Image (cartoon, rainbow, N blue to C red; front, top):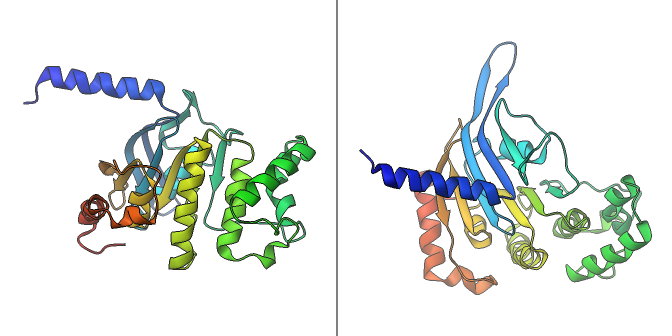
Length: 272
């Protein structure tokens, strides 16, 4: 039997974490139902993300990772439980929460710059100010000279950089990313990991990243969450105490390899 004093201490710690969380996932379960069957995708997920914290979720296909992110983004309503941002239940998309998916959708009849400021245009914001800020951010992520280019002129990595700028333009306090680099080649993906690490550290926003890549999760995050196969549950939360700023040399650190090995152990040696 566990020590009651320790149980009370754990409960107090969790209450304290919830009170200060930017994003709180509270007892979230979700079932997909059809006329012929029901599938339990998520089962009792509890997760808190502090302001400025970078959390990565890794798991096999079909474990409910993307479902969890869509619930956090307000794009889905969970069957049970709730997602909360700053203590308020998420009931739909929020202006202070940015979302990036694997496919960086851009309107082909707009330039890169006009695609980036599109959310500001839709919200009736100050386009002159937004364009100036967008140009600065595009330059910062290596897209100087491509402001007026058509989306078709950009590589996959360049389009994802533009998508990140679009999400950051409204200065979100929380950034949700669902396999943003899944379609990129290995070299471009590694470059984008370095870029994302730098952007996240500079922006100071909290980040929730969904990924299949063990090395990506460990390299980018302060905590890596390992999920079980469906129904998705949290198998382990692994703290990543690697120093920041992260760089390519971080991946040569013995602790980086040890952490990747710890995560990989949940997948029976199958790796990424």
